[in-house]
Length: 515
Image 1 (cartoon, rainbow, N blue to C red):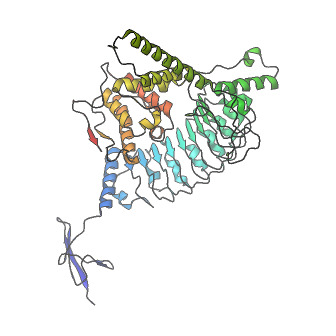
Image 2 (cartoon, helix red, strand yellow):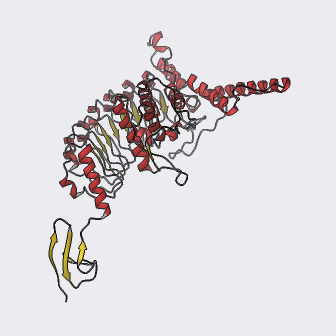
């Protein structure tokens, strides 16, 4: 049996010299057997080099990005790097079965993303992260949230797509929480302590097993409430006190109070019904309290993106939500306005065309474009009845960049390309590198989209947008916070110097573009 002996290594060259009769490139036990007549290289694998670069970058920037590396444990090589000042850690899309204890030592950590792992529980050492304001636990296997999580200064808690059956009673300690997403779980009831979340503005409990809504929610400054795809049969009359509510999503529930015929008309009619019910059950209410409450006009209707809602009627309902109320006697007010605007626009165009044909004159001014006119008509209706910040965001981006955005604004901004160009419009080269689609690859990967969005938000910080006006990356990437994105764009444009808008394709030198 041939023996193989490791003689030594050259410290400067990183080469190992071996003597032996083993086959080229083989390894016997713990003894290295080289190639090329006994001369072998001990270079690390490409994946290890990439991991080391990520750790080096985290040491320099404070942002640790280990997303999508199929990690089952925290890299052991991290012990050779100083990561104590890490403020943002992205461990999403890995195979972690538990939260690494090394992460719980990052006392300066402000944002932790654990999306799409295999977490079944969270350690008590999580309490060390007393600077943590954003925590994403979505798409894991958590069956419960530990009470220790409620002692953190969280502002955003995302725990959707898990196996949660309840929420901890200590939830009320999260006094700074503004966004709570526990959708797509198995929660049967919300604890009354949820009414103590005095800063909560966005609550998403979609696709759970809720039978009723807690009355304590009426005391919160909610702006968005989504309890669709549950088993709720009634909305508490006290919810009429949610005067700051701009969007309520309640489809796929067996609602009986208000009935589906009322719900399908939209938010204003729902709250008028709640006012009426409150006056019936509480006759001693003053005349002032009996009047309908005032709500800011907003375009976020019952079912965003749909002209007609789809609600269970409450009769012969099934838990899966497959049965829908199919009544057709109610016309959506928003739809009627659009039809009227379109009819007036087309009628004006036909009248204008007939005059031109009769007189034989030539149109020397701007060409009248029917599609543009129709789009403006619909936009005018949407702005007049609706989501003014979002409509204003669309108008500002189109005016600044001389582009035409599609109707689905969320999908248009998902890849971050338009937003990066907008940041460069406000301050040239604030985003030095932008990933853009190519004819060969018309859609960017999620990693490139995330890099664009992160670069945009970082540029906003450097330009001077206040932290309170900055949206979260998931608001853009997952199309879940269009009003927050509009607020960020508005704050960014407020810092722009007055100048003429530019186009995306300019002859002046711009940022480097990556396909």
